[in-house]
Length: 220
Image 1 (cartoon, rainbow, N blue to C red):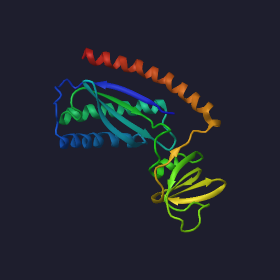
Image 2 (tube, rainbow, N blue to C red):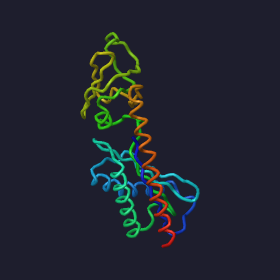
Image 3 (cartoon, helix red, strand yellow):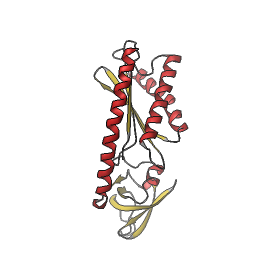
Image 4 (tube, helix red, strand yellow):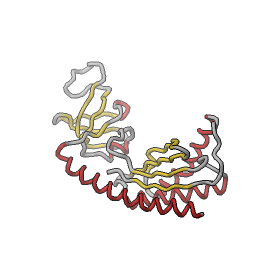
């Protein structure tokens, strides 16, 4: 289930146009330097950080995750902490995001590719599809070529992952695998539908809170 939190923060300063690419890269690096320690201190991993343009404002998207998942309350807490850290950093050294911006904090969806050991570890028990760069059990020794493999994650540590492929254990190091993709199983659709319904209800509540934040910002 993906959880989301949002807040809008106008800086009150003019937004420069046509910023050099090097300057944009430096701003992103500063942004990560401010946000990542806050996320880690809260007990989560910063999975992705992006900045995009949406009309007259920028959107800062922060994706966080943890071994036990991320609850709606946790997303709200991280969002507030990140927002405060950004405010403090801008007070100290000027704009990190040029002009007005909207902060969005969320947990990753099931379509997020599995690229790191922790991604695989957090999906033990799930069915995944992945490109294997070495032979799978039914291949003859020495047969070349990549192959798409679908199997259930049995074990995963920092070095390798073990899958159940058609009832047989198959083990690979991460260097031998491409990005994995979690497969939606029909016997889990009820669980997914309930999660999405819960997510939609809670997101509506967050939108109400964000509207209040926008009103407060305008009054300031």
